[in-house]
Image (spheres, one colour):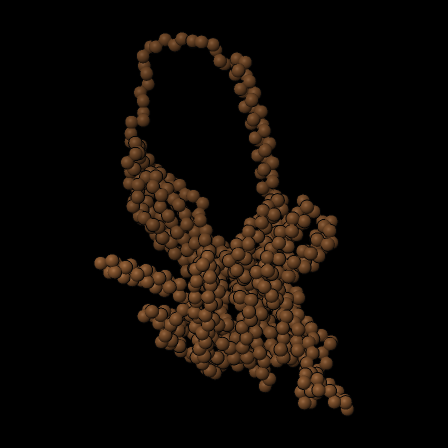
Length: 611
């Protein structure tokens, strides 16, 4: 009997472990979001477990160079004496882009513990083939080979150069090279003046490489950075070059001597060729974007600046409820476009409904075409009277750049039945025109018509010493409250002063978020949050619009505020370090910790000079 019980317990524990293992299994797709025609690249499927019966997707619109290539790896972790082992299987394909367009690679599938799981589909934007014009490179004069101008260059590729105001642009920075390069770092990042930007780079500190052929010359290609830009004004806007620094390995011809040197033959080839490391400064070409203003013809009154392709829905969690019982109205806008910048419409409610400020939540993802996601507003609403009510439809308008016209969406009409509450002693009957409201109950009292004598008893309080003291005290309190109210109101009206006072508080909040990402080793989220903390602090403290911020303007204004030049230089250096720290070699955790500590120290120093 005991043996049977032990067997059952062991079986249950094994089943629980199996379920836990299945819940932790992930099967993800790793691929580039943008490539050019003729470029060779890699698509990988990574499984953190043991699987079998891998089925590859259909790579229509792409040429398969090779694959699948299978590799496995395992790691062991010991935490508090508990040993855990993780196995990883990777299935890789080498592909070549053969034509322009946006193509979706379907999901791959694999079987894990008799359960079939699938990866996410991958959307790839294939652009026109790159050119190897010398304008893309700016090489150092130390180069000794005449062909160095074509050995490494940087190119910025927007997916479109003519857009409407508010329409998103996907900008990709690719480095092309035929020689070994290392120690890649950002020397100067563009300020993107006139654009709202979001960095969607997803390289986790490592660069995915592919290959392509330009003018008959094979090149290796690596994506350095991916940005989504939203132009905030009409006209011609110029994107400044991105400047990089790298260490390139250059081949040189050495003069042969009559004296035999075995070390020369060992380190050089039979022709006397040797290699030397040369520091190169390269930059992308400037890009001019033509931004068209939004048309004024047929512009709906409900338009609030949304640009893209969207859907709009509304729903309530209950249609029947009682007086003073809350229900939730949820408004959701989903689609591709400036999700984070758009403003949701507000519902129109009956006058006897009490509504609280909405809870706004935003979910944003990115693909080969840029940013997509949803924005949601949740309203808590409480009806205070009983009756039958109707929530009218809500209108949301946006500009569709693909169709070049405004589109208007309407939500559903919701009918709500509110019943009288159990604890309510009175109620109101609601009519659509709100013309008649009839109250029922026993809250009316008759006038006392009896001839009663009223006599004064005790001390007369009116105009007594205590009465005068109380009145005087109330007047003093009123004057003090009035003065404080006017000061606070004046302070709140001065938005620049409000931002200045709250700059440190907002920066500390973002630094705390960056610290959480640092602990969880989420490098991209850490660098984005840390960068936003620094730029946001400078914008609020110096009263500069975020889109007009640049290294030069920061330096000039901080010096005009009589900030120590050493602090200014440290601030500018920290902003630069934040841009290229993710690409620098070394311990990622150590780099994040050094940046985090330096950021706290500099903001503390700057706060003493920027009162």
